Length: 254
Image 1 (tube, one colour):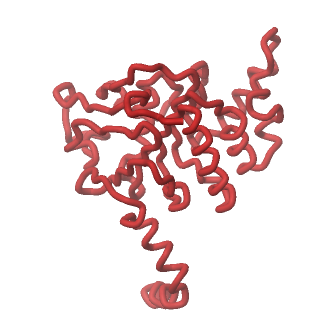
Image 2 (cartoon, rainbow, N blue to C red):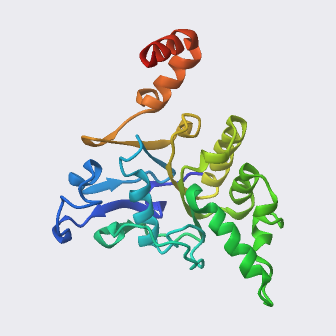
Image 3 (cartoon, rainbow, N blue to C red):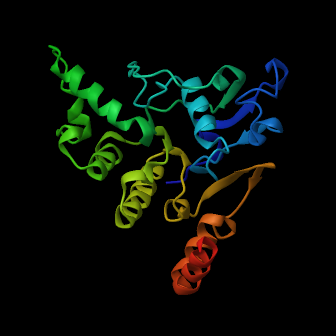
């Protein structure tokens, strides 16, 4: 199935620079935002990567909220709030949407997934004529599975295709084998007209071949390839030269 560029549900993220009160206050003082005007997105997979503190989650969160997702994750109908900690960035961006609307969507946040699982259990305990929500996640409480199993249950059962899926560090509870399985699942969903925007530290999850990758640095945003990322280079060096790298690391400590 050919996924043409005009079929992207979300084409780009634009920063409304003229509305920003000050570029010296958070989050607008982040280097990734100071020079940002427009961030084009791939119709299949876009990666947002970078070191901690560069604003990856902040940017994904803003896009998700602007689309209509709950700041703590879930599909569009989730409205629970455990703790309001999201930034105001979503008020200062514009989403350039494609001509087609997705039939499905999900904002996955590893950081707040426990809160999402709790909310599902609470809603299913309420009397309703509708089918239990957990049925869409494999029909087993996410709290009754291991952390990794509950993560993968959403990817496997809840994501149905023809959707926009925004994932913030989905590898957090996944083994390397499950990360490979996640890549296969992404490919299956892409072939069912789905679009992904993913923030990750995992070189495995960064491996989808037909994708755009943006690296957020202290100098701004740069387009990059997997082989150019620090994640890939450091992991490769460690696996090929573990003893030498450990010797240098321990020598620095001593």
